[in-house]
Image: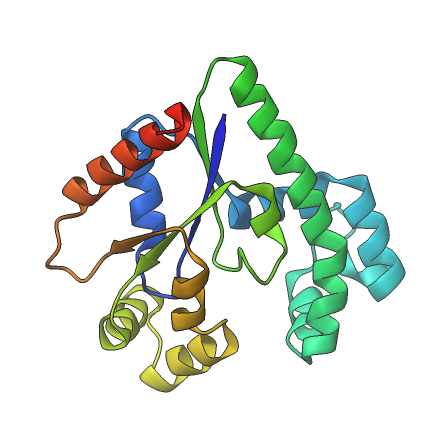
Length: 201
């Protein structure tokens, strides 16, 4: 089995590319969605957050007290690091178990979608990294529309992420999502590239 990581900054369109890959028959593990589920269900995450933040991090009904977690998380990079060290290893393990189940059913290629593939340590869970790349002004415009946010807010979020050019250097394959280059053609080219990796050619 080949495991690929799909990454890209805010507004790059990585989720849309992941959707196209799913339509092409490649199962995609969305780390954001799965991390939210695991934060509620995984005993090690629950224990870690309770030890870090106290009983108030979970509500009486067992659901996550999101404002409590968010206030702590965004207060400093150190705080974010503490939370990530609790959550990310469990997401990593969950992805591996999911990939094993996919392999057992005969799937040959799976993908992990993560905006923080390099920063989180998830890079080591995949064989190749596919980066979805878009010009900065287009990314800002897309994100402003999607999140109903100001340009300043989006720029602040972008500046908190790993530099796009550095991600590009570390990626194995680039998909250009500039609104001009056809994505279906690029997805087909990616599938061909992966087929060559599978056969070792």
